[in-house]
Image (cartoon, rainbow, N blue to C red; front, side, top):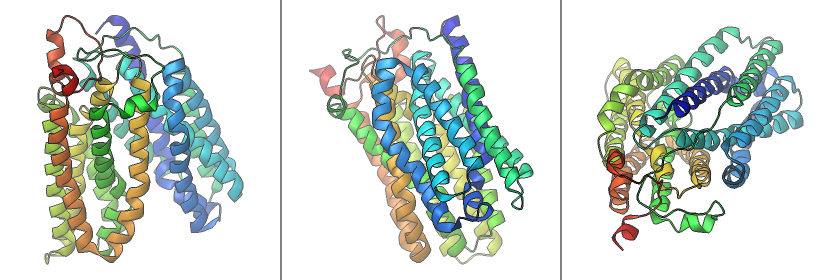
Length: 427
């Protein structure tokens, strides 16, 4: 990594931490703020949460093309201003229409930040440093969310709307501060991974869908987010409360255990996975999450004491965190390495779209199933986790050696980011 790339990467990581810190102030308290503090009811609060997902689904298909044509930095700065406007407006809104409009602005801005920042990381890293760069990003995001949520919890007061206005103002300030930091970034030319022909920045969604490895990774990504992230605050929490008799405080402990596992284990896990095949690492995550669902089954369906059930439930979230720590240096760099030259923004946006779809469908399916049919719920998501391993092994057969084992790129004389599949290499 050159000195210019290192300087840019440091600013990007600071930006990631700032954005996560700002989000941590408001995300845990959004439902309470809309439903109780503003007195708009549970229905409006639920719609607000849905608006975030809908706004993301609307803007992400266009975000990728904008990143390809304009570059990630201008798109990121626009998204940050949009998100800051939405956050401040949400803190001042008092009626349902203004709350929903502000949520749409905030949701759209947040959604576009993800692929823009990911593309900047790709452009400021090499094949050898990319996994560590994304692992650092994930670590800082979780640390920022945790610290922001902790501080926000001490500032918030449900009897005073002004305390929530302060939280949203802090979030808006973090977005604007991030915009200032990002405006100082000078994007260098990044090395590329060998293994595929280059493609024009005018590549279309049709071209992306023609990349079979990317399509398989997108299917795998949907299952990953559906079976894990899509269950955290919906199906799994409902299962814990209804089937395992978990208290709300124990649920908070479980969520904290998830974050703590990521923060503590991230770089130890990175050393373990960075010299192993990406497809095998993802397959291993599927097995770890399968164990997590078995442990969850014991928590809610076993006949142990309440203390044992609580310990098992907390362990479930910790095991999910271990899997997440393994995925962070694996999946996002693989998306980048599958993208033809100049198309990283399009591919990052497409994968972010898949993630948003999974996060929208996951709670809708998991929540009702967990509350009414706890045993089928656990079995269903146990099978999904095993399916992750199967899909990962199949994906590995589609990847080139460099895409599956990126450290081989250091042996290549020509470095150019590729999107070729194993078929095209052997052709």
